[in-house]
Length: 445
Ligand code: AMP
Ligand code: GLY
View 1 (cartoon, helix red, strand yellow):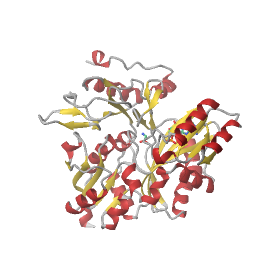
View 2 (spheres, rainbow, N blue to C red):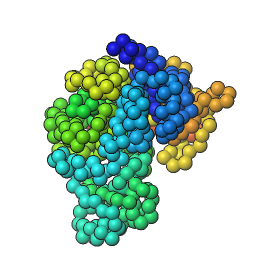
View 3 (spheres, rainbow, N blue to C red):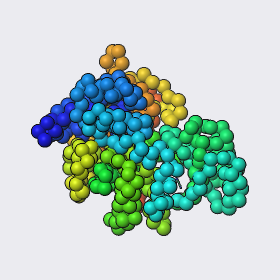
View 4 (tube, rainbow, N blue to C red):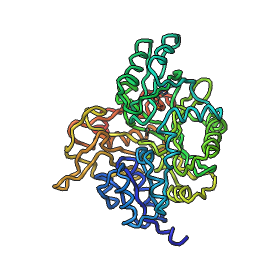
């Protein structure tokens, strides 16, 4: 045990999620050193970074061995679906993250749909097609729209199309199957009933049959305010998600969480990592939209700062397979994260613009870097679509949001963009008022 009190940890990935993970590790008494691959400009201030890509399995295996890593924490889904966790475990390294077979829960929507149906876990009704003729025939006979068409596989969040009528549905099928818009991932599709409701994210840390429940959260996936425009990786989040009240949570626990963890174990999937359940809260109850086998981004940036229980202790227990179920200690404050992106995201963006950051941060405020890099002159510059996330904990959601937006206004780079309505729907529900977070800088002086 003593050797595990001073862990050397490798965090794999380069986003805001990984920056939050790196900081959580550094804050833990169990941690001796954190290294990251490949990391980003901000992570490099907190951990030694190595220029090994997150999908370079041989490179990562070599790095983990050379650096005598005790525990690897794998952030993104791609290395998990390629089998990085298995590979590192074969080399005797403890890993937080599921193996390749279990990673199918995210990598294949059809695999997950079959599991949900087999175990009677509530989800949208759907049919699977691998030929476009059959899919077209089905859609011609369909009377209910909208309908949801999902490419089977990892498509970086772009493989889900919502069709509002028969013509749009035919076009979606053509995109998925005929034109191979999503490559291999589109060869089979799910045609799924459209669910009405509000979305919420549930994160669990799972080890076999045992799990702990992390704080609830809600993401904002669309690029534009009022949930308009194309989907992104996520433009902001807050925690807790008040829509998941205690009664709803009890239903989710009984109908979804416990049966899902048991189903995964019953299928013999060796799951040691984060199970992130995307839910739609419909008028007839919660339904599973998707499973992810990793932490959400930006959900992690609001979940980890609220945890009083040491997340590293829990990840270590999962990795070792000896997690014991218990209630976690969670701070009562609300956390919000506003993602500051480069203009043009989620389309093409410019890189290399210098970033100006707030000179000081108040207590309980964090800037988690994502698409940042340090240039040859030592300046922090933009290097990706989602550049950074500003997280603030506050006594209430409006208080946290006000402070987060004041900080966002102090983050400056050419063509920066962020949504000014993160959490606004919840604030309006609570207070009956529409918050105005524009131009906070001049009023917050
Ligand atoms: P997924 O990757 O399956 O979570 O889908 C991405 C997004 O598409 C979700 O976060 C929802 O906003 C939306 N979506 C997916 N499935 C459905 C559905 N059956 N009904 C309504 N919206 C959906
Ligand atoms: N924020 C959504 C995701 O990480 O998939």
